[in-house]
Image (cartoon, rainbow, N blue to C red; front, side, top):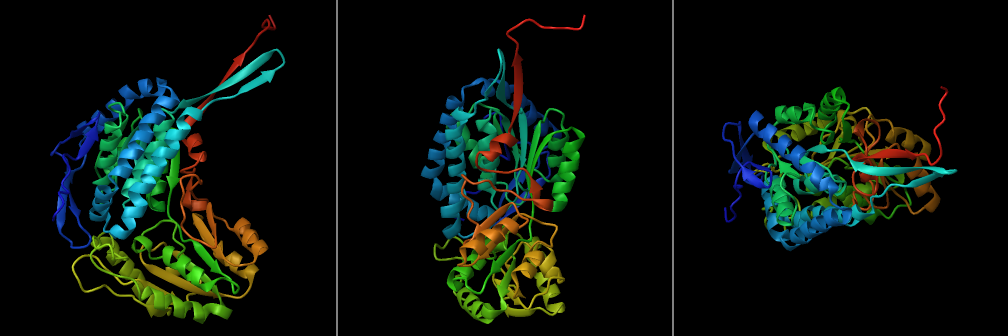
Length: 485
């Protein structure tokens, strides 16, 4: 390795790196080679208590600062993050296996966008005045207190910022637990925030598996929990948080539909299908993995799709020419290969891919199934890997019913040149994040989140502020108080 990927310590608490080797060792594996590149230790009860105490002790003074002062620190952190984009992108690639071609333009950059956006918004977080004759009410927007963020392994830098930036802008303290699969990047986010002037204790990172998350979620000193993860994990975390009546944001999984009508620009539709199935080796929660293609253009679409998938450059993620990298772990690769076997067993037609690639690391081919039916396992369950299911349709009403026939509701997309149909379909989708003639764009200015089993609450945009703050109403009486006796 030409880069030193071993962090200074496992945790970042109260403005400094902290180590406690009494916790369970967590080996960090580079997905491109399968070799160990670092070791961190899961948080012990003492570490968890230290982080919560640090956050609790520091939060009130942070909330008491003006929004302008808080925002200035977040914007300074955004500038530092952009200046170090190369090194942060390299670390993201080692942490996740995603190609540098991708991490260099998506991960730290979107994290910096979030810090900048919410840094700029922090000074605008005001209440309102409500006149009631001579009397009046005013509202105050106040911090919740200590927030816990639980991250997923696919976007470790981005998620650390998507949760941290609005929490900090509102005056909260944050304890962030990254996925044990990708523990490295969040530590750099904490380091940069502290360098930018964030007071000690306001953004802390602790490592660990489910039991560490459970300890954080159930601690009575914690006021808010934000999770990015799977639906089964979400159910557990939601239930645990409900015991303490804590505020909760859940950004969970999906089995999102992408509908390609007969009048669509096929080249753009193929681009959307590639972005919605093979970017990050298919490990994106909002992916449009059920691609409904009108029968009139189905074979034309499949032919062009197979041709362009064949252009994927599969190789060393650090090579700037590589456009498709490994799965995040051997376990995840084997789960996805198991779904390929299920697709074959159920009679889906394998158009391209479907196998592990014979090289070091956790690589598998980008895979496309055609002639998929709605009842097949590959059309019902979230695979979270580079497996696309192409389904046929002819009628709009029929395809809308099928598209919405799922427990999930994270995202949905439509490709058509019919303006009224595009908006009609978008309105009819049962999903929180929809796309017209594009897929998987996620600017910080737009709300992101799901409906149905795909989650509650929204990340990004002004909407996130409501999930990291609470309103206090103050009634002011200007005349005498009347009482019955």
